[in-house]
Amino acid sequence: MLSEERRRELDRLLDGDLSDEDRVKIQASLESDPEAIDWLADRALLHSNLRRTMRRRGTETRTQTKPYPSPRRPVVARSRSHSWMAVAAMIVVVLGIVFLLRPTSGQTFATLEETRSALWESGELSTADGSRLGPGTLRLVEGLATLRFDSGAEVILEAPANLTLVDAMNCELSKGTMVSDIPDSAHGFRIKTPSADVVDHGTRFAVSVHESTGETHTQVMEGLVQVEYAASEKVVELKTGQRNTVAGQHLGVATEGVDQEPRTVPIMPLDYGPGWILIPTVKDAYTGRVRSHESEILLYLKNTHVNENTDRVSYLGFDLANLGSTKIEDAELLLHFAPTGWGLASHLPDAEFSVFGLVGNVPEWDESILYGEFPGKPNAIHLGSFTVPQGVQKGRFQIRSEALAQFLRQHSGSEISLKVVRDTQATEGGDLVHGFASRRHPFLPAPTLAIRLSDK
Picture 1: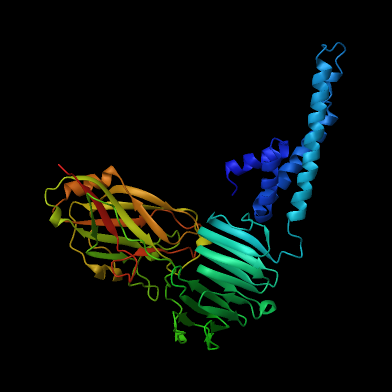
Picture 2: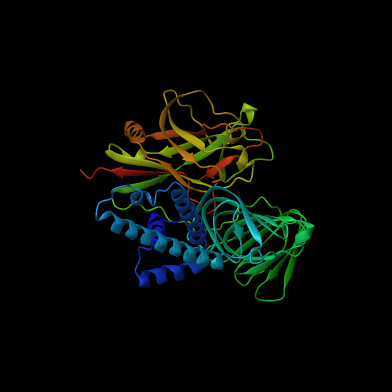
């Protein structure tokens, strides 16, 4: 999206309110800014239509039609007429530049069909839904984006990701994840990564690239692909239900199972500075476990309108024994979400989650509750809420509230239990199952309390 400053700059170009030097500089910058070109074209046409309308209504000559103009009025009228002519000439020039710089239909080969909760970094291509795309790079910071190539290949880009479009049969993924559905018309569609080339042979598959290492993960849901090692002529063939990892000088082999969650971005360490302490869970689990849908490393969350037996609720246990009587000034709960691989994001709107503190007769519990229900029905105090936008399945989310800090103060020196639920129900069946990292996750941080203690 163009910044407000950039729009003002382009408006001044249309109005002719720039020096020759600035005008040439801005016109040159349009060559690498397709989004500005599109915006400027629309704006220029709007200006042009407005002026035609004003002329039809006599707005521009109204000051000349009065029967007794003041002695100075004709001078003003001539000045305005000259101004309008200058601006009209500038519009003609700008439109000429715009349409010369706009890619022709022969230069585009893909369409950005749909985005969900998308946030983009500056790039060389338009990021508006429905945009025709040619060669260039898309940088997706958050959300999902669906692209369809003229060859018939369809890909869903999952943030954070960088994808360079080459032509209707080739693209380059430098980080992030893309899920591809390739018909017969796009047989041989190629995805180049820093460490491998993934070549389709009629299939549905996913490719993920680690941001800092270039490590490439390929999973085949259906069909056949070939993974070509970039440093040699070695090739690994993957069939339905198989996966492969290319890391460093190691090509890897085809292994069974596509339910692995490849790591695509480096994990930033939790750092709150002086005065803060970090306390991870000593136990965590979720209820509503469904056979063949289990996870040992993620804590699931779901709220369905169809069958409450398939709802998932997560429980967190923290040990505050070492805090003793220390005064707590502030507190935050951090949860790191990751894709579960279950359900459809399109069946769920923006999702709101709530965190509760369990009080009263809280029973002893352990992580075996994954296989059943939480024992007993203790009272629950609402500590805070947060929202995960539609299409977003990964990232760090948190609550920071006085209610949380007060709850910790009241239970300082003991073990506490928190409950996390998804308040938002699905709009239809088969909706997304959300998940966040448990204390058993291999690289994501466990659910963590960040507590700022008093220095008095």
